[in-house]
Image (cartoon, rainbow, N blue to C red):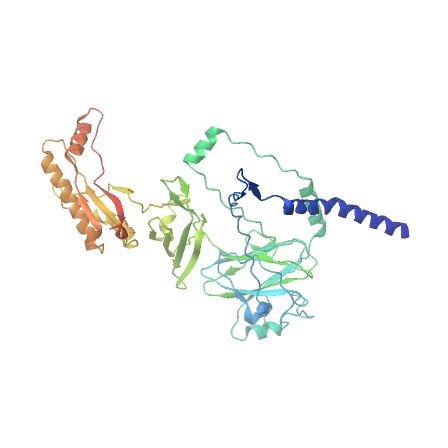
Length: 485
């Protein structure tokens, strides 16, 4: 035994010498390194400061579970389709031990070990989906789902007068986890192939949006699962979803049987036939996707609720449910805001991508208007087509500091350039009147028509064998901001 102890001490000493000593030496060298430089005149010159390193990506912000969240009365409210966590580890059963199994009710927790309570209100009819991702798969998380029965709900749970509507008490499958860990350790990552110049150029011209990779949940509830209930001796992660209805409230109690365990993330959804497009915001001039301050409100059923509220939304899939209407508002400094109102029923006929162009508010940016029409040879807009301008009205209402020029265009063969110049200017003035009528200050808008040279060039192009008239009826050009004047 003494020889074994001596061997262990010698091994520890070698480890310290080989592992720690080089670090100490490196630190000593850093301390003694010269930071000044002597010039010919004998004066010491300070060494130029190194350029600042690029900031590191922010670490994930973990949610510290409230100390009272282990009790039903202080259940943490969850929002549908919103990930909560990663959290700190639940600790203890709280001030009240609400769940204790007995002979009449064996299919619940034998007792709460390290628990946290959540609650969620159902916004529309469907099937309840729960995704729980454990920070450590070796933890033994179980969960129960209760339907709220009224003001004395927590007391009824404590007295076992209310039974859970969903039960998942499955134990950790250590053998499967060990095998998975072994295979992961043996797997070698494949080297990434280098992109060719042609591929790089193509990506630069049309960037491909890469959707974030979500970590697969460890346990939960989904419609594809077969088991309606998983008991203590069973192994598995998921139980079958239960039908839920709009306005109902459910409580989820999550318990970790493993002492000194780790945290988790949880996401609750309602499975329903819905439209889930990829919502992106694109800067065409910069040829890149941009993050925005995004809010999407869902209206109908239980009133109005935010389904997206993110100050740095980088793109992703959003669920729109038939029968509901939505309001989308996105903004970013240096760009015009985007405001849209729509119904999910209308979106079903479109592609799986909702791409919004982010137009810059910088001087010189322009917008060509094609879908408005005037009476032949006049400056009067044909009724019904003027609504095209309302999108631009909304843009400039949200940016009262932006000034702009409205320039009118006409179809001309150059026969009477003077008359065409006046007509193009009058049409620009008509558009300005429309903006002013709909709440845009007149002093923010200037007008212009076509010049004589522009009319000559347009007429020459139209008279050319392969030429044709331009379909641009007007153009809006940003001239600056009111602060510039």
